[in-house]
Length: 115
Image (tube, rainbow, N blue to C red; front, side, top):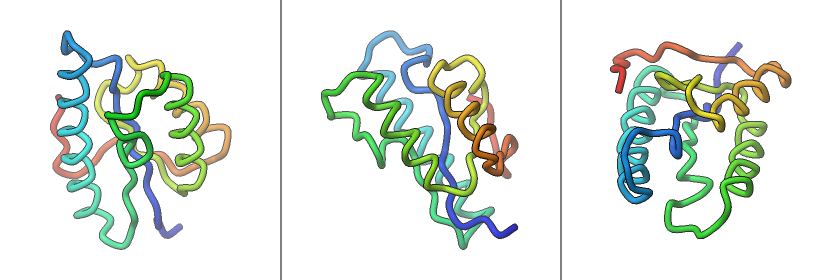
């Protein structure tokens, strides 16, 4: 199967940083690292990260943000899961959705560094 679009599932609120701003900054950096790694491995695929869907400056609830992310995930054929995704409630919901909708799932990304 050809991979044409990849949604990246990475912890945001479940990160270890202490403040919301620090979490958002760290998550944004991580998303761009993952986008770059996936773009190299799957150059023909469009890579979508959560901040493409819900910019960090948006003042919405976690439930609304997750709903938007699930919608984006469903529009992709593949979901890539970041290191320690199991520790994040949002990532676990995204995993169950990907499983239920039989999306291709990636757990190891070339150049992957655990963070």
